[in-house]
Image (cartoon, rainbow over all chains, first blue to last red; front, side):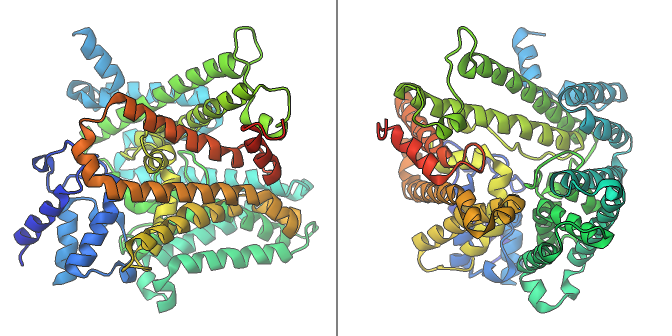
Amino acid sequence: MDRAGHRERFLAFLQTILRPGIPLSAVEEHDGLLRSGLIDSLAVLSIVDYLETEYGIDFAERGLDPGQVASVSRVLDLIERETS
Amino acid sequence: MTRARWLRILRHPHRDERVVGWAASPAGAAAVWLAAAALLALRDVRMAAVFCPLLALVFAFPAHRNTILSAGALAVLYGIVLERQGRHLGHLGGDARIVVLAAAVVVFVALYGCVRAAASLDRLPRAVRRRPQTWLHLLLWTALAGAWLLPAESPRLAPNVVRLSVACLPFLVWRCGYLLLAGRRRTAAGTSFADHFFYLAPVHGGTPVPYGKGYDYLADTDAADARARARTRLSGLTLLGLAWAWIGVQGVMDRFVFGDARGSLGLHRLGELVSAYDGPVPLAWAWLTLPAELVSSTLSLAIYGHFVVGALRLCGFAVLRNTYKPLVSESLVDFWNRYYFYFKELLAEFFFFPVYVRWFKRRPRLRLLAATMAAAWLGNVYYHVLLELPALARAGPAGAWSLISPRVFYAFLLAIGIFVSLVRQRSLRAGARAGDALRSGAVRLRRIAGVWLFYSIIHIWNVGPLELTFAQRTRFFLSLFGAGR
């Protein structure tokens, strides 16, 4: 799957964890998801669960840097790095 | 300009493009500096005397900011050592200055070694690479044990220098932890010592909790250009102003809620009530003290954090506030996130995430429980053990348990509360989203009241001096329900 495909899947997932009242169209690729209040800190765990389940990414070995999942573009970078 | 716009600018000057443009000009920068210097100096003249001249240089030469702040960090490091000498080794007499200077040099060399280790973590042995935080704390405890074995009072220079240097480590260890995280993430590679030293010995102020975390977060929030810097400085200035507003509110509370003067509610501080639980305080007054103390402690934390974060923002780092409207939180986990953000971040990064990504992956609820207990309970207690180590060491094993047991209980209740809140938030997420818009004011108020009740009750085992025992605190708690009155 290419970056656009990963993006589509991730945005579909993101829709389920966005704070209430925020439309998906409000999310820019480089927006800080937590910093701009688009998601809450609990949602970071949901993103981790999603990446583990959907892409088999193992954070145990590399450690979890919340910065890696701080924006859509960074999540996509991580997916590309880990699945290439 | 309309009155509404003036008010908007006063509240959020960094959101008004014309104000930001003016703040980016030389005259605007000078005005921001003057206002910041006044607000900081009124609060702490000594801190301002070190920080404000450096800030002027940072404003003038932003490209050299880290180097300028690192020069100030030398003075801060000396101050840290001096403060610990006064607190733990006050009997050094005429040799004190030499011991302090030598200890400052030792700590500086240790920090330099830590920066070099983080920058070239890949070249260290595999065991260290895999678990740098474990090795950091092993080193810390080895140093603490070594210092503890040295004679308490020695006429010789070396033992005193070692003991004093080691006494500084609990302040620095979490900052070094963030440094090693950057090493593990390979973001520290290619950086200079000055890129790290300024947050290891922070000239912007702080406690053992690293406000502004470490290299990664600071680099992430660094203002990219002159306009962004001006915006960040203005937001820092606003925060200093807000801190002063909260100081005013706290003064009003001290006068009309806690004071003995005419017209005051005359509430006692919670710590005083706990130490004299069967005193002549009516039950209703004892209950009223709980939320009053919660508000007061929140104000204190907000004031302190706003000064530190405000100073960091003035330096060009758009970091988040330490305290952000926790008293309107509708869940325990939200309060915890907003009350003491950088302590929560410390517990999350060093305890929660490592457990969460390693253990019980196939059992989601157990996974969440283990990570929450590791952070909010064990991590919380460990942090406070390090903080209170001199008092605990003096008290001996039984005395140390007596001193720390209220904190162990407090952190346990906190962790359970956060876990239940996390599970509830998770399972209700979909339902809550649908019903969020419909949620009535009364429901919100009830939720907020529940959060206040929980945190003000568990605060009983956290408030006041360390010497207040678990039994005293528990007796006070029971007295709220009439027991022992």
